[in-house]
Amino acid sequence: MSHETALSSQLFERAKRIIPAGVNSPVRAFGSVGGTPPFIASASGAILTDADGNEYVDLVGSWGPMILGHANPQVVEAVREAAGRGLSYGAPQAGEISLVEEVARRMAPIEKLRLVNSGTEATMSALRVARAATGRDVIVKFAGCYHGHVDALLAEAGSGVATFAMPGSAGVTASTAADTVVVPYGDREAVRELFARRGGEIAAIITEAAPANMGVVPPADGTDLRDGGEGIGFNRFLAETAHAAGALLITDEVLTGFRASAGGYYGIDGDGWAPDLMTFGKVIGGGLPVGAFGGRADLMDLLAPLGPVYQAGTLSGNPLATAAGMATFEGLDEAAYAHLDRASAQLQALVADALAAEGVAHTIQTAGTLFSVFFRDEPVRTYEDAKDQDTAAFGRFFHSLLDSGIYLPPSAFEAWFVSTAHDDQILDRIGAALPAAAKAAAR
Ligand code: PLP
Image (cartoon, rainbow, N blue to C red; front, side, top):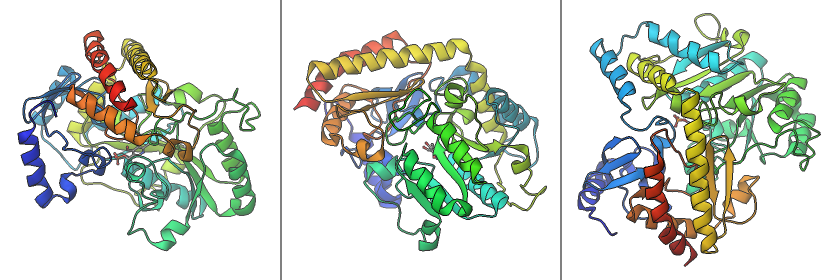
């Protein structure tokens, strides 16, 4: 380490005595890259400051929500103002309506939406609705897609599950796992074969609208005929296959929603098809704990107290969270997306140039403004491909950047997150640190 980290080290030791691995979400522990995670004391714009006073350019953005940068003045002011009116009511408040109306305005398939407190709750609740609506038990998911730590969805998931090379999770019962069928991502033949065999048992297919938790692996679009696409994109193929069998399609936009584009990933490939249910999180809460699930009104009206599907939350629709979400949406205008697009493209070019200069195998893949860097030369289409990369080279690259004050996601399986606060000066700082990091990766 080229900078002082004594206070973060002390905090990490103290945390480990009382919090498992010292963290409240596994990837934060730096398990796959080693070393001590900086403990963050404050954040502003694109910069994190740790307990020792070191500054880092942040490319994690709290794993997606901080799309307007940290401590964005409008968002902070909205939260401050809301806090002055009380922290939680456990009763309806107008901010909930504004936030769900805004999501529905930007996302055509949303007829009704309910707010929860995390992406995990959103996918869990969507599965429950799908099972109730169809009277069927089986859920189809794709290897490498992460949908939160829902029991039924931990099989062959990405994100932290990928980072630690876990097949799933202990503590998930055999009967729960038996109701989840995992299919290789993008494999139309496997999907067809599964539906031919078990179509009558399948409640829903759930897929990330564009997988981003094994790195970014965009679905084949209608022009991509390599996988027998017959002119229709993979997501549309899933919708048609599910519907033909009386099953539902759930697209998970917790990560891609309002980040891949103004209309999420659906805004990029939602032509001629619609999911039945969608899930959201991250950006819609602007950094406070929010998730949402919604879609067809007839399905959402199955929820209690209208219908038989129970779902609830003490803090759901929290007034601070809805204020932060609305203030974030207010900042997400056309200019913001143009900025995100430009910053993402410039950063990709900087990384590609630096790695190419040192002969480091790499592939950059995108889904709208989202991107990730794989440490291998060939394209990544499946979870198997994603696992076949040089994670040791990534670890050296990561630590060199950290030493130079650049904070990447501490895993080779994660997307990189830019914000509207990533301006030319910030990109220059990253650009200056990249050559040494590429050299370290090449070693
Ligand atoms: N779905 C996707 C696509 C995600 O990326 C995530 C989190 O990274 C989740 C669901 C779970 O969201 P949360 O961590 O808020 O529970």
